Amino acid sequence: MGNMFSRLRITAVDHVSCHVRAGEIFGLAGESGCGKSTLARMILGFEEPTAGTITHRGKDGQPIAGKQVWRTAGAQAVFQNPFETFNPLRQVENYFFGTVHNYQLADTRAEAVARIDRALQLVGLNYETIAGRYPAEFSGGQLQRVSIARSLLSDPSLLIADEPVSMVDASLRMSIMNLFRELVDTLGLGVVYITHDLATAYYVCDRIAVMFRGNIVAMGDVENVLMSPKHPYVRLLRECIPATNPKKRWTTKIQLAESDIEEYVRVGCKFAGRCLQVMEICRREAPEDISVNGALTKCHLYRQQMGQV
Ligand code: SF4
Image 1 (tube, rainbow, N blue to C red):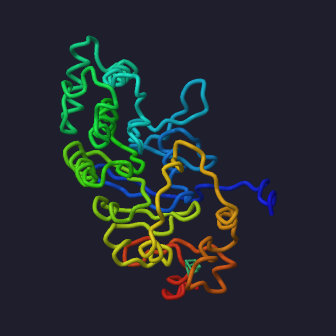
Image 2: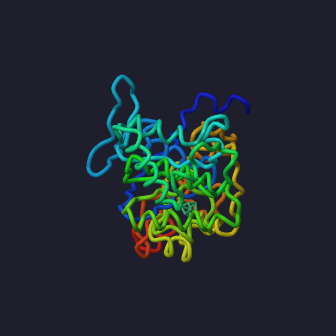
Image 3: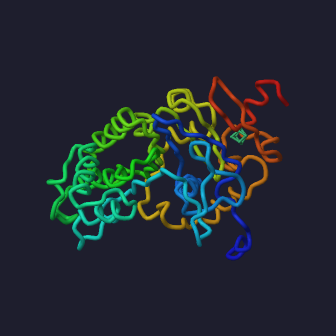
């Protein structure tokens, strides 16, 4: 079995179509290896799609001169672990001044400080709270706020946040989630919230897409998708939410187990091996996207029910 899959080409994200509106939090949910991280990397320009486009405000992602990578203008990342975002030996403010310099956001130091202060105030801090301090002098929750403020420096219109509260103390998680909501409401930002945690997704998201093995299998208003789940995978997820593995992050390549790879290359519905409602057609044909009560559902069950066979 060892090398059986070694020559296979895995399509981590396949035929995915979704859009994020200004002023909304859009959840991208699923277990590790479902493709949500790859999709996030594409939106941020760390990976180029082999087919299809990523557009931002009507414009395609742009190749950066000299490098075959895309950049979706106006998108910034908020990473999972703020203690990994900042070098422990470097004062936090240096990162801010570095970003101001890279984006040419100020001509003088006073202007830079004012800009940094403004970004920090958006997250409930100010320049004085970070001046001269090192990462270890902050709590996890505070440092995540600092990290979010840095992402806001360049006035992005889209934040891509990867499990932004999974490393934060449980008692502070809600305050960070509420902060995203405030930023969306006050700045009109779009936020893509990537998570395996349906409970926080339900709490904070307006809409959600649930991914399984490279496909979006359910997408729509969060209430609709999560509280009246139609897709068998979403029902299963609601019963047994997989534990997060902090080592599997979208900044690194995810190692798939062979059983995962089997699901990726499966003909028909990729969920057929685990689905309690699997039918004969599921093993032959990949299901189409069907609108069920206003939510996208990729499942043959509804094709039959809707008489579309
Ligand atoms: Fe289950 Fe078939 Fe629906 Fe796939 S298409 S989720 S196997 S019922």
